[in-house]
Image (cartoon, rainbow, N blue to C red; front, top):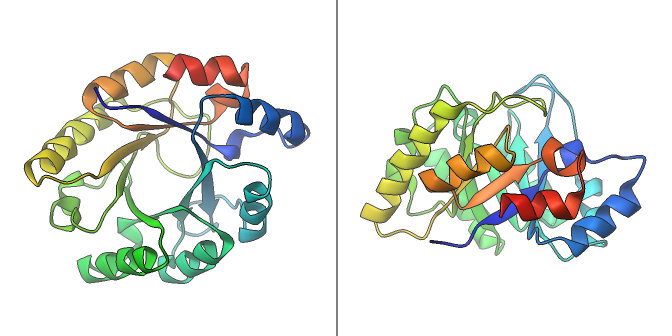
Amino acid sequence: MTKTIVAPSILSLDYANVSEQLKQLNESKAEWLHFDVMDGHFVPNLTFGPDLLKGFKKCTDMVMDVHIMVEDPVFFTDVFLKAGADILTFHYEACKDEKEVRMICEEIHACHAKAGVSVKPGTPISVLDPLLDVIDVVLIMSVEPGFGGQSFMEDMLEKVRYIKKQIVEQNRSTLIEIDGGINADTAKLAKAAGVDVLVAGSYVFRNDIKAAVESLL
């Protein structure tokens, strides 16, 4: 079995208690820190800018896992790469065509970061089949993107199983990440389906952080 990575989402961080929660995060077994960037257009919510990412990079050695839910992925890719993203994930649906997806992935690689591509629940995962040669992380949304605290959509695990099969058949090292409704129970289902990276927000930050991360592993 491959190693599981936990990526707590700061969308659910208690911003009145940042220092203590960051201390607990740094003491936990979480390896990635997940940033949900929303522009208020691609999804109906508005969240973080690049300065917040720069600030967190000063406070932790965790991998900065940035997920941009934006209408203009070309512009925001450059913005967040300059701010220090280690992994930059954008949406397939925000791109004009496969050529643009490939171009953005190559731009990310040129900046020595890893490229991720995400799909919404309604998008067939098969659209990524011809692009796996440039994708380091496939992010499957198990809720509709835009807000934290939603319930896990178990039928999205079929996407996990499908893309896992494609990754194996193409002999790729692409990781599968899942985001939305992850807790100790849904994490077991996700890992059994082939997920490598678990994004968890509410479950981590509304409980004992170290214990919650441990339970996901």
